[in-house]
Length: 160
Image (cartoon, rainbow, N blue to C red; front, side, top):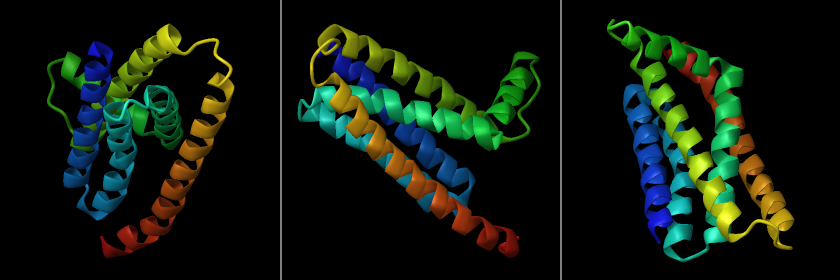
């Protein structure tokens, strides 16, 4: 049960990060709210003792988010903000800094869920099925997010 608390705490912190991103980027609030729903579902899966699905989603979803963040260049901006903090300079972009915090929490989520998965479910027959279904769900989830974002960008740029 202690493992659930750690994963639920990290998942809840990720929800807070995405909602804070929505505060700093009000034109993308609904998009960030949508991003947070996957982590709310992980907490609910843990609450209802669907650990197998929660752990797998807790590994796959942050990994895909990290890949998308890296591919869009936001992760590079986050590292620059962390570098500024290490040199005792102020941050110049709160969104990038918050994306960096989200990235660190995402890595922690992957590590915690992988540890729990290995202890409880590794080597079982349903492992492959769980991975493939979770990957499909996360793939559709983030495909929807990317399409939604792609359609929002021209509207946000023209309103500036």
